[in-house]
Structure formats: structure tokens, C-alpha cells
Length: 119
Image (cartoon, rainbow, N blue to C red; front, side, top):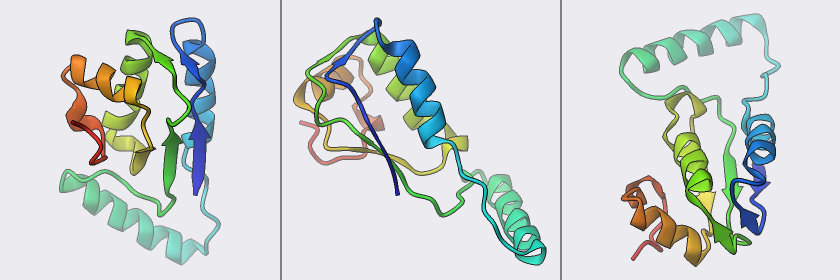
């Protein structure tokens, strides 16, 4: 499982760096399989996309948000984009800090959080 940890101060000053690091950390890793298996997985992925489901490559990826003490709208926008991206597959937000939950609720985006901690 790939885990990316958000910084304590997740605001406009660090958003470019976090965006770059998130893109690198959460990018699907290439699978090393035999050609026949790869072709079969490609066919299943295409069928899944045709049915409107995101493509998954079996790799679990998570964003650890426990350390966040401050988040602004730029941070909310970046996380919302990552969590909404169907091409990203299964990206989960682990242990969101209270300030992050409040920011998502204030923006009306609490439905994007895959957690039962939302009040």
C-alpha cells in the first residue's frame, strides 16, 4: 500500500509541492506480468470503464491526513480533485484531522470523504 502524509500546514504556500508529491506518490505503478495476463487485465479494465467504473490495478493508495493542523481552500480543492478523479482508482483519506473535516463540511464536500468520522 502506498501512503502519502499531508503536512501540518496544508495551505497555498505548499500546495504546488504537495501536488507534485501527491502525483508521484499516488501514480499507478506499472505491473510486471506476462503479456497474456496483461492483455486479459487490459480487456477487463476496458470493460470496467465502459460500465462507468474506475480502472483499478489492485494497488491500494492512501492519504494520511492526521497531522493536518491548518488547511485552506487550496488544500480542500486539491484533495477534492484527487478524491473525485475516477482515473485515480481507489485513493482513500485516512484519519482526517478535525480541521480537514470542518473545511470539507464548510465547502459542502463531506460526501467525498470516505470515513464515518464526518459529523
